[in-house]
Image 1 (cartoon, rainbow, N blue to C red):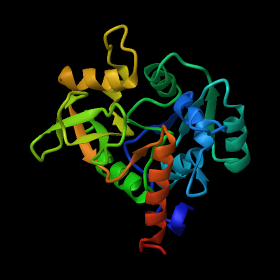
Image 2: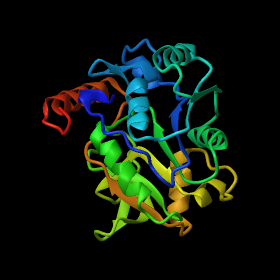
Image 3: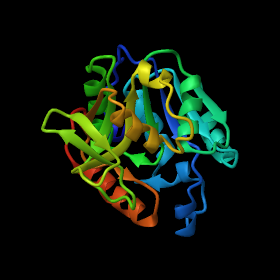
Length: 251
C-alpha cells in the first residue's frame, strides 16, 4: 500500500523494469548534521528509500534493482527487513559517478525501456504514478525526463523545451523554466548507445543525449525536491505534510 492509503496498483506494459540510484555519499547532509545514510533520511517520518521503493511498487514496476555504496550496509538491511519477498535486486558497489551507477543498474535489468529514479528525489506518489503513465504511453524510441518547476538545487539541471510540446531542445543550459526531477524513462536505444568516453555524470549523459539528437521528452511532475541539504529536508517535509492533508482518491 502506498502512503496515504491509496491502492492504485497497476502493471505497466512496455517497461522492462526499474532502478533506484542510491550510491551517493550524502556529504552535504552529513555536514548539516544528519548521521544516517542518505537513503534513510526521513521525510514525513518515512525514509527516502522506503518512499522511493513504495512509488515503484505502486506503479507495478518489476523487476526492481537498487544500487548502494559500500558504506550503506544499513540500507541493505533495511530493504531485507522491510521488503521481504518482493524480489528486489540489491547490489553494493561504490561507483565513481552517477553515470557509472546508471550503467550498473541498467546491466542488472532486462532489455527494453527502464524507469530509473534517484533515491533523493522526493516525489509525491500521485505525481510519480502520473509520470509513469505518461512516459509509458510515449513512442518506444523516446526517452522521458521528469521535470519540475520547483528549482531549489544549487546546480539545477535546467531543461529547455520546444514550445508546449514537451520536446526537449537542451538539457543543462542556462535557460529553461524547469529542471530535471530525478525520474527518467530510458529507451532501449538510450541504454545501449555508445556515448563519448569520459562523460563524468548522469547529468552529462542526459545533456549529451539531447544535444546528439536523440528524442527526449519532458514530462512535468509538479513539486519534486532533490534532498541534498537540511533546507531540502524541511522543504520536502512541508510538501509531505501538504500531500498527506490533501483529499485523494482512495482515502
